[in-house]
Length: 282
Ligand SMILES: Nc1ncnc2c1ncn2[C@@H]1O[C@H](COP(=O)(O)OP(=O)(O)OP(=O)(O)O)[C@@H](O)[C@H]1O
Image (tube, rainbow, N blue to C red; front, side):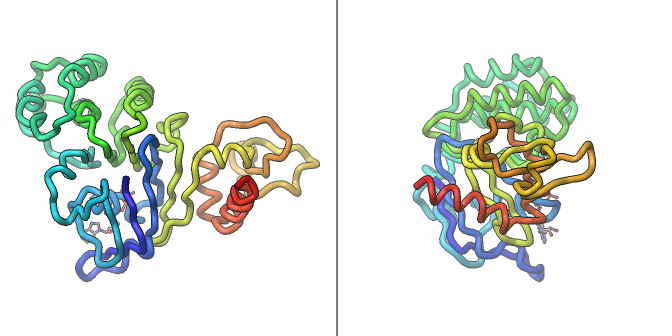
């Protein structure tokens, strides 16, 4: 659905933001795009939606060069940005004005989501809090049913019940024909939602793995004394969390926070371990 090869990007007079980026985003998946502040996640999303153009490299979105602003292609892409302005319209008017741009838009789905988020179609968007405005945009984005849905910090501003509601809604939104990419620092909010992890660090992709490969081969928890040899990475804070080769143990839930910290400090070690397992499996 999105193929990126050797992509490079920098802003005018800036250092290189993205370098040598090679990624393949496939339909039927929810990707988690992670990285420290300023690593270029939003920039990469803007490139994928055709809002910015790379300086070098090959990239295709839905098989097309998106810099051509092809309408058929743009109507299959929706992005919920981190910061946004919405017009001072009633929610229903906003839907009527914007939905015609998206052929797959479902009014039923939109109003169901608005109801689920405890909003009313008659409310004026300008009077809503930031979190509630974000819910309008999330509901609209899901209801567009575009093949590609990008979300930059979607849970930022959502209250605690809305975050778990968001997870449920997103899990229902994905199907074999759609690709969803979510960038966030709130990794816990994506718990049990994403099935592929991409991590950017120092302008590069340092990690790109399906969750199934991670949970199959790595174990997350507190190790026993005799397991020290299997530890790939550990953190002494919060009771000593560690990541181990899984071997004969039962599967554990992937600790995204621990994995993220581990990749930033030991990316080669972790990638080598996972790739060795992956290659052996093939
Ligand atoms: N319009 C711009 N002009 C120049 N530099 C920019 C512009 N927008 C972003 N940058 C710089 O590009 C780099 C990447 O920014 P970007 O917003 O893509 O990072 P991010 O990973 O999304 O960060 P965060 O996690 O803080 O949201 C940063 O160093 C930022 O200062």
